Amino acid sequence: KQEVTQIPAALSVPEGENLVLNCSFTDSAIYNLQWFRQDPGKGLTSLLLIQSSQREQTSGRLNASLDKSSGRSTLYIAASQPGDSATYLCAVRRINFNKFYFGSGTKLNVKP
Amino acid sequence: GAVVSQHPSWVICKSGTSVKIECRSLDFQATTMFWYRQFPKQSLMLMATSNEGSKATYEQGVEKDKFLINHASLTLSTLTVTSAHPEDSSFYICSARDQAPRGPNTEAFFGQGTRLTVV
Figure 1 (cartoon, rainbow over the protein chains, first blue to last red):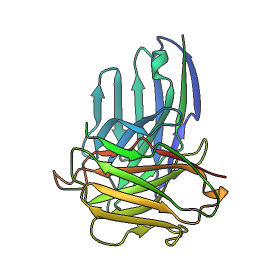
Figure 2: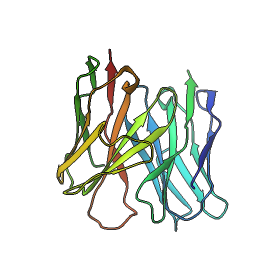
Figure 3: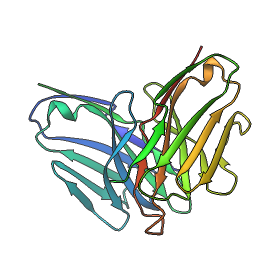
Figure 4: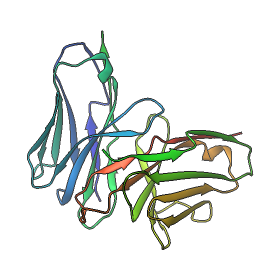
């Protein structure tokens, strides 16, 4: 069974800080891992998709890394802004299973 | 990125009535769509996988007769909550993957969600 864990559950930082969100998964047999952002009462916005053969992906101030062998991924947010405040979810797509396994999310609050 | 549209964004209904939620892929075709449920302050729980032209695949513990799924075309899947009760109140989100390019490695896109309140 695939279990996905995200640490920390909540994080509050002042504006401008660089920060790291963590995601770990128990079964390394995955197709890919995807990071999402969810604003309160809204759906999910895809941030970054990392294939199992990749080590990292970058988009603007976001950088996601993947260490499949150790079952870990990190999402690095540079120069955080109040607009980054949201819940961040990671999800893995397990080989031979046509579905995502989601972590419980990290709720980020960036204070002005 | 690709767009998945979900409608309605919120709905209030009386106990015992049925509610239909639509999920559309606007600029791509999706042979498979996914329906999730999210309780407050919790992560997403997959309810079922919707397959175009065939029966949906339900996760363990999800009542098939309660949550009816229809995937009649490559761009539309519907979830009908039948005989709704207050405990069905939740946030429902659909997801779809572009069927082209083929393979399991394509990105998943999510709808904006539907807040269902049963009174």
